[in-house]
Amino acid sequence: MSILQSKSHDFASRYAAMQAREQQRWQHLLDDGIENWADRFEQIADQRGEYVLVQEVGQDRVWSYRDLDQAADKIAAWARHTDAASIGVCQNNGAVFLATVLGLAKAGIPAVLFNTHEPAQRLALLAEHAQLKFMVGLAIEGLAVQSPNALVAQPWPGRICTEKRRSVKLDDPVVIIFTSGTSGPSKPALFSHRRLIGAGIAWALRNNFNAKTRCYIPLPLCHGNGLAVAFASCVEAGGCAVVRERFSVHSFIADIRRYHCNSTVYVGELWSYLMNTPAQADDADNPLQVIFGNGLSAELWPAVIQRFGISHVVEHFGATEMPAAALTNWFDVHGYCGYIPPLHPDAADVLLVDEAGKPVPVGVAGQALLRVSGGRYRGYLNPAMDVEKLWPGLLEPDDLWWKSGDILRRDASGFFSFVERSGDNFRWKGENISATEVETAIQNTDLVREVIVYGITIPGAVGKAGMASVVPKPVWGQTQLAQLLASLQVQLPSYAVPLVLRLLPDWHATTATLKIPKARFATDGFQDIDKYPHFILLAGRYVQLDQERLMALNTGQLCLGFHPTEKSLSITTELKTQWLVEETL
Image (cartoon, rainbow, N blue to C red; front, side, top):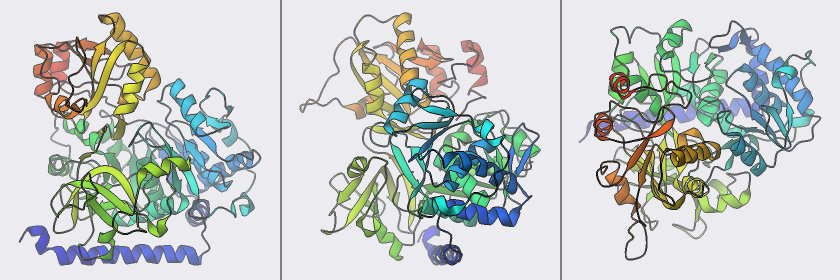
């Protein structure tokens, strides 16, 4: 019997107790007449008043619960006169971003969240897909733009009347978040009031948050981890969110100490970057106790908690558009992303299947499917996009399952572990990348005859880096490489731009069924540099992969994908510094 199996009764009891606490919280809210996230925030703001809710890193001003509530009222006063079905928000991390999202919720209008680091052309395309007319924040072509700072500077209009949002219910969307390509290009996914409140409750309880919580948030607030998992749980606990505009390896521990942060949200890459910096004798001398997020690998987990003195880890598996709550592991059992007791009724709501849809045995990896309760699913702004995520009638004629696109493994104790992305997708920098979308972007450059894109493993890195195997039209030199990169930086988010290129003189070999064997190419990676020219993205440009750089990559001493604005480094400096110490997410 394994250690996990010997403790199975304890795990099951704790699972049931946590479920009971969540249900009790929800019942209190329903008894209080809470119908949406704006109602819940106002309830907490009235209780917490002048207690600090948001501390922006590097800024002297702090925002109390009352400050943010009143700033949101100003946003709502403007928004309710637009008669918009939804309004875009494109701002950097900060209190004003949060006030904008909250203000739109007060006005009963879903906020469509954009990442300010996206190329302008891509932002315009995403805005068009979301059918927007108004944007609060960054100017985007074709939209009426409103300055959030100008709105927040207006006199307080008083608490906004709830009449405008009385028709807004728990299952209506509060925010619309662009998914990072779990199947095809990014799609606007719906995130409901119920899920935002529920995320706040779930992680506040699992993280043991309370009014003394000071949570460091270096991840984008336009994504679920930053907004729902981290900020909403801070609000639910009555704590303080310490918000940084952008993650910095250099500043992480210094910020934790300076702002007395006892918790932080993460994606796995964050810890990879930190662990690849030289260890210091005082790394564990910090107030950080709780870390929570997703993507912390089994290999890194024990090293992270030992080096930084972490006492509690909450790892999860989830997706913006999923029809149920995330799987969570708050038991401090290394390497797992979720847990459901095998004999609990909830266990039947998560199914792992093979490619044919047949359930796999315990211990065997399979795609994770989640049961759609009530047979109704709304995951995307465009209902037509919901269909490809669903698998009807899998076990019974009237059942309905949601396809995650992720491969998990469930053990006999009920713990789940993440294996990999399925199909034509891979995960890098905490983002799901569609190989098809990247291939289309490369083909749009008119520089190639054929291209395939896939994810590859790079020593010392978490996830799969993008690699493109290309049959170029002309003979490529630095001019064509620069043209390709410039075009991709316009069409794609930075994390999706391929880090490795392989140039082939002729068409890719195919199987008997005329399929290109991507899996084999992914396994080969970038090792065959003597046979084909390879180029890597380094310091903002594609440079040829030679033997020296190959050795540095294979030993984890060289980091790909330096931000284009970073100062270019010589190969000697690259080898000394190992990993980029100002990597950003």
